[in-house]
Image (cartoon, rainbow, N blue to C red; front, side, top):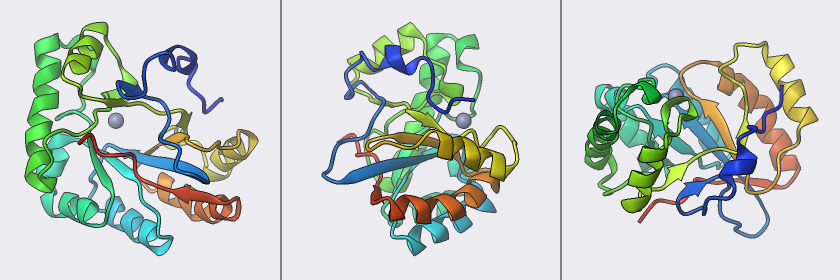
Length: 213
Ligand SMILES: [Zn+2]
């Protein structure tokens, strides 16, 4: 399995301010860890502790409904210097929705996230990476950036952690990579306990993707 999505070759033609497939160069080697599908009451606090231990920042693409349910936890994520992103309100299959329904999922989550970190707009990551042309056009017209990824940790595949680690070691990370992970299971935690020290030894800094405004 290759962690680099096949469609990346195509998506890289889009300007990064519209659809980001890499994070900004900040001098030195930088990785952008991203966590989808949280906040999760059991796994997210442990993940935040782990990141703090390593002085690492990341981006959390929250499901609006879960952020509403666990708003104290969502506040903690923002308060600890991580970026909040929009991962829809209920994580539906986006290409089975009308554009209006897609926008309602996005806008409803914006209202939830605004209540948490006070920001007007949060980068969007569609559930399962589903992109439709009308949505791409609409978000571009609103200057609402989509944060995609360049590297899939495959942490949701439920393959054993040693196997996932081997795949990741076979496909080394590059500076600016946006790494897709999830904080609704223990998988990413187990991976990161191994990977963060290794990445740090390779000179990588772990940073959050920039806010929209
Ligand atoms: Zn998701």
